Length: 350
Image (tube, rainbow, N blue to C red):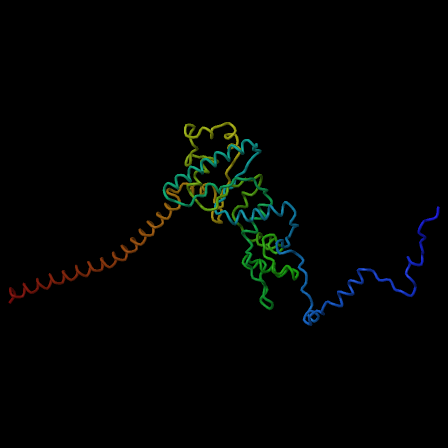
């Protein structure tokens, strides 16, 4: 059956005399006709280059999406923000044992905070204490970066004397002269950069941070933001009791003597401590924890020692002047007695 409206192909196809223009091209031509020309400065000066890395994610030595890189950054922040750090070696502790140890540690530190609050001391760091397990290799690398790399390093000056690679003081400069970062990496100064890695590895060959013998095997860290002998003593009484710092008794703290807690404590071994950036052995750690009165008591002891030292120096100086004065006075009295004796003898002889 033929269609009711016959189609004419001549009307569907454009004729050869007319030129077909699409709608987008027609709109573009209209916009170009109405849009003004760009300024002369934009045509002369080149556009700013596109940054290779976003400002919130600078490049790192290892890819930032790796878990090891994030752990490295976390350990660096932990080392820089913790003035007191206890290093333990753990041996296959169960989750229930970790839970019991953390519970008793929190209870002991909370009691110390309450005692300090009653005395009017506002430095309460018991809630900021953290006991965690760390990856030994990554922690050792982060410790090298924190100890041996300064983020405010000075770049090498062209034409200056070449630094000695065997000198620990100029080892970082020697490494920096060997590294040739790109233009985008010149202003990068963070702990995950390639410069920080190479400088820390190179300076570790000549310098020591004191914790090298302790960083081996499975490690656990107890960190505190400030140095508090009271909190340290409470932590040692829970995690590593001794004769100097005994553990709490069963009557005062029955939860501490539960089998799960005791089994976990037997699997913990205190190796040493890092206090204000310096390494301490077991004896030094116990000495810091045994300071009577905490930091206030230590300051009082320092003031008393300085006062006694000043009094001793004053007495020593005064003793020399007093002895000289007594000697001169004794000699003067002796000469006066001799003069009186001669004056008395002369009339008798005459």
